[in-house]
Length: 167
Image 1: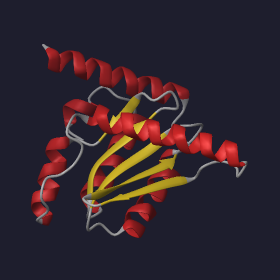
Image 2: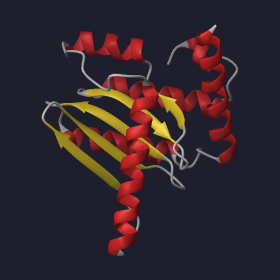
Image 3: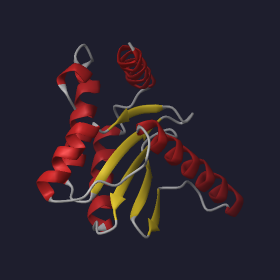
Image 4: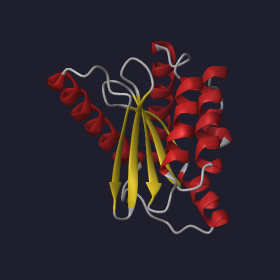
């Protein structure tokens, strides 16, 4: 992410930003990413400017949710809630991941910890197994540090960033 976004954040928060940035920049086909808390609040999202730079460098065209990172977070939260309900109804245990393939792209949702979710919007030509593998790496690295204190810090950071951009 950009320096102003991470200025003043804890080491753990900066590390999560770095992990998310690397996920977007290094994995072909990823268009946008959102980390959502168990109550559906956006905690962390990919930086749209850097996403665009990475896509241009890879020769990909711009596609994705038509609104802000909050739109992706809303979809991820809804899909997560739906799959958790389905798993409970079927009594199959916890949901590990969900993938939705569409004509023009794909959506991946993976559990991080205690109900938090990682959502990735991928391009239509993305290698789904590569994206799933890198998501699992992110979850493995991020899951143990995504504490209630860190979630609160990330949420406050997003709120203050939104307040600054509204000025």
